[in-house]
Length: 247
Image (tube, rainbow, N blue to C red; front, side, top):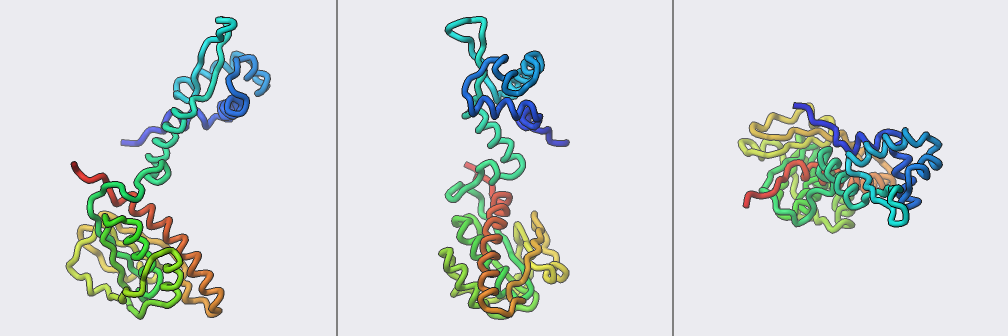
């Protein structure tokens, strides 16, 4: 069954209705003829679109105390915020301000895979352990494991994530283990990563290898950029993986 577009998004998507909401937000409560003057549209057209906005609960109306024949329209900001948040959460939990640190969740297992298990997958594992708040058990592995790169340790330490005790692992180290999600973080690893039976999410992130950069300063900058991107990618992943724990 297809998901229907939230009414508030359909209402705001129209250029005139968007302009009317902007006018109400910046000018306060307005009457129909005032909105007509600001938008350059006839009053009957404005009235029609105001009804659409009211039906979507983005706009409310009240009668003037000075002249009961007049009606003032205003944006119901708290309700609009609530509706937009709910719509955003239907796209992705984090867009709507969904799961955050400390949210009760069921325990989830995730494995990050790259070629050498020296940078990208180790950094992703570190983020998952930190951002999961104890609700995520994170692991990493490489198809051809090497030692953890010092730049990965340095950059993640800048974010309070300690990789000093991390050891490289091969894919065979996890034979027979079950994971909720398996994430390949380099293109080469994707081609050789085995199937993990029972994984609900099999995800690929095409991330450049910072170790391919020879210049040390440029390489460190690339590691910092990688750390920032991995953070939001891991946040998004965990928001999908984790669900409120059963009470």
